[in-house]
Image 1: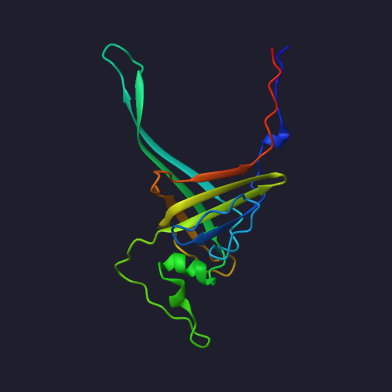
Image 2: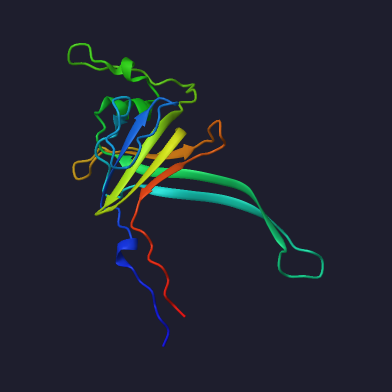
Length: 194
């Protein structure tokens, strides 16, 4: 009989989690269980769709004459993205990201906050920290240089929560890395098969 190895504690459900943003150059929290420092501003409520970690890669295959299978593949594009919908659309940090406006420019005068959207947006890179929790398992993703590269339409409707749906693209830092992982997961048990 074949020994099938399974360990439920090595699975993960994104049961809870959060996101934070800071200026480029802000250090990541030490672990997913570490409360981010004051420089990190929360994104607040994220929709129940959670956080989608995206992988977009292209490659070039090299197949020699006379064969039908490649003998080598070269990665020509490797992109990491994170997708989420921020529901706290009145949070100044979230508005700052959506409209590419510094938080300081969103300070209210009396009870009115006013700003204008430019027809010529400039790059708006920031650092992002995402933490995901499931019981004793937690994962952290530190994006040292990220930018919202895609924004979905915003629907204002009686039976729907308004939200800012974003795709955040991770760009390489000075070390050439796009995403740093900080995972606190159970130890994988030793395989005891034949």
